Length: 74
Image 1 (spheres, rainbow, N blue to C red):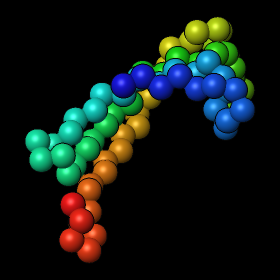
Image 2: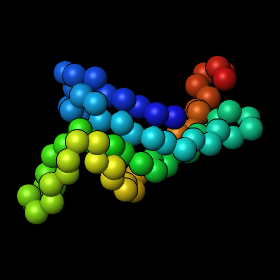
Image 3: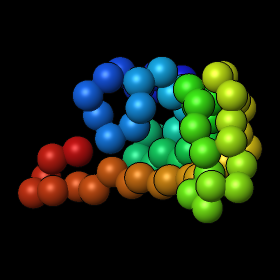
Image 4: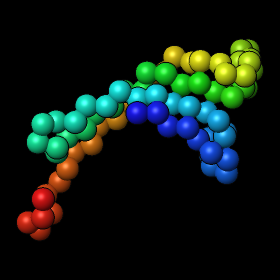
């Protein structure tokens, strides 16, 4: 999955995040790992590294979600 951010949010416009997603066969569990991020341009939090336009970053981020049955609904 690729997410491209638009203007007006917490993330600068043009930032792209690519994710690998796995969904369990029964559809009740989803896991994802962000494997790549491309930023517009900027500097690291400590200001030591600057990144030109289209800079690709290695990232370590993941999430997991689980479908929960509520009041008999599936």
